[in-house]
Image (cartoon, rainbow, N blue to C red; front, top):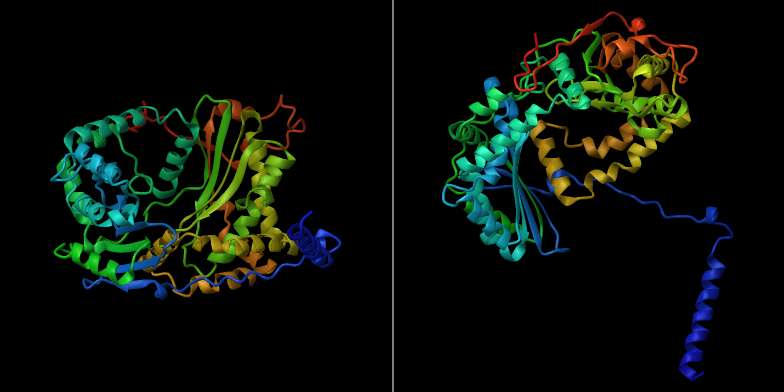
Length: 493
């Protein structure tokens, strides 16, 4: 062995000995430095164009890519009821239909040649268009993007292809029990005339024209509704100058109208939609609170304990783990900004055990309203919410879009800085209080999709519950919902 090898071996032995001396006797004795994360303030990233359009920017040189997202206020709530489906089809056609100066195929080929990813879409309350491209191709690719956003072509041949796809999907929407449950619950909770429940029909899809799309696009896609997010490899000053130049001369139209609140009031009770299937879908829901309600965080903690946290939640443990009645069981709290949202519990089970699973869910409602949760149970949820909190900011694009949403909806700028403290401050007594104030089983709609006569018979012959602990009659008289024609959604005679 030569001198160099001997020296290397000696150094390695010395280093290993030093490290070994520092190693604890057992892995449980390993200590870690505390990870400290403080959410950034939106003001650190906010800029404005000369036109007043807000721009949130987070530069990064990790990859030679730039992502620019245009976010617009306005969405499906603005479409006429007789044109249901217009918003979604318009969003799709903005990308698929070429531009006024380029045929769709030529536009697609140019985008592909530049290795860019360009998309557009329209949701219930907001719309967006986004581009991801190599920094080296930004100038040319962004030109295509702006042409699409400002001057979509709405190609008639592409429109007919999309229309055909929509019509085919409509024909089969009664085949899926989950889809039926979502639709019928929307009607019961929001009212059939509200945009949250509105469904396209064969007639509404067939009535949509290029003129309809052009008018809808013009109402939403303009600087008066616009906020911009930019992330990736760029220089902030140069990016602001480029955006100012490219948006120059784009007139701001009328701002999108306020989002309307539903006027319907759900009538509590049992409702069923007759469908011959082995698995039954059950959803139990009532209207909840707004996003900015002072009780929003403790109510979410309560929901997580009850059914929102998966295998650690009470409903999942009781219905799925202990009783084996369902593979999927839980709850959700979906709040809205402009009006109260919805609390929802759900499970999918076999026909004979529908009543028992429903009873178990209501038992958990009753339990969380009658006694305080344990400290361990509460801390499990608090720790989960706090430890996963940084995920809201792990992606720069997601963070910029979060700040845009917060500004658009008027959320307190200090919300994220105080979020973890507010979660930590939730006490068992507070969980009990909000469970009694905001969890309202007496106001719940129980919607069941399945073969009702079999469900009513219950588990007489079932090994799952030989003692017959529950019966659907205990939840009150059931109302049959009308069977709907899949194309018209009109009740069948």
